[in-house]
Image (cartoon, rainbow, N blue to C red; front, side, top):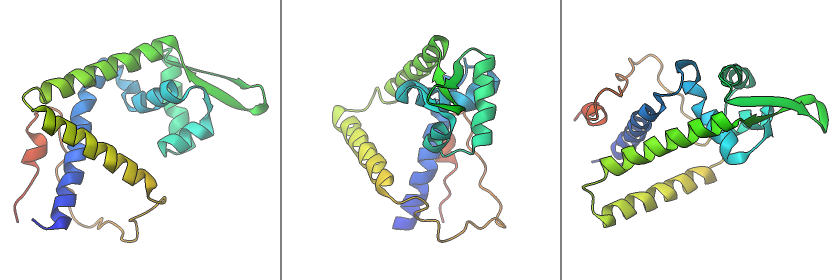
Length: 176
């Protein structure tokens, strides 16, 4: 298989894995599912300004503001005036928000454990090592790396993955 095809399938598989793991978000209110990553960032990084959160998540400030409003509505995050800069606010996860993130992470860990239960330790260690390496190497790329060629927006999109079937990512592959 060509390197280009391997990389394309790897990208599809990573997206599929991400979507399937998002099943753990089901107990979260529908309006806040999209904000789980934001909430997890607040739990991991601690209190921060909205502009910092926007930069961490690579999202526009308007998107962060809308998602934050949903989190606040459900008591999962709170904002307070920034004492060192009266023009900005500091955002943090509430105790309820930290519990939601802990529940989602626990459910995702169970999903991973169940999915890899038949794997031997060598395969599991190899996957973990290679994912860490990919994560590190992607983080070393300069912003906008690889965007010299625009996507072909005229071509029909591939059917999206669904979270209904664990076979979905493999089913999306086509031989050519």
